[in-house]
Length: 288
Image (cartoon, rainbow, N blue to C red; front, side, top):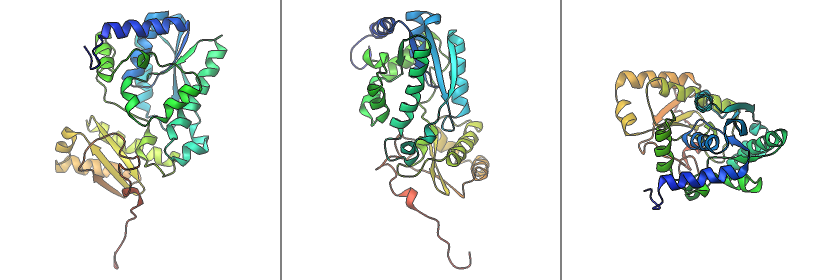
């Protein structure tokens, strides 16, 4: 039983029934476990010929996420399209005033809606789940406005349900750590630019190459603030490893590298999470 008392089999039945009612589905497929399970259930409900998985490619998506999405679609035998999204062309997205995800989702869902019309109809679906209701999720408003369905959310799936079903179905990303677009590393109120996203991508690639599993590199101008899980916090104490990490992140264009003593957590770039750090500018004393 999951936290709400409903069984996983019942939730699966409800989600499959909802998807079957759609007749045809265009699935927004990221590299994460939620949308992977949604795609698997869509194929179960409708068959491969009535399902299209679509992944948006832009500067905010790490290449590894795109590779994971492609691998999931291939493993399920689903048709997979990669589209170029232009959220960075939207002024509201670049301004990053707290509703960035609304503009991003609007961009993606409008593209998926066009694909649905091209294919002769069908519902656009995304992998929202019950856990998302407790967060500030402007992207969910975009979904409501554009009529995008959320079968996992409607069926009452929580994260533990999604992971359990993914493991049951043999989906490769079943135990993959939660992720988010690279723009989420930029504090609210700071402009999102392609140059910043590239810095973050390169810096996080350093951590990935060193075997870190759960991490974020938060962008605070010249400062890279590293959030690590407990295992990562222990590992970074090794002088040789730390030196490699620092050198790699500096080579990405940052001037300073710091480890956040509060560790990995979601939402720390939002107001109230790290509201002052991004305002700090480095100072130099005389003679430096």
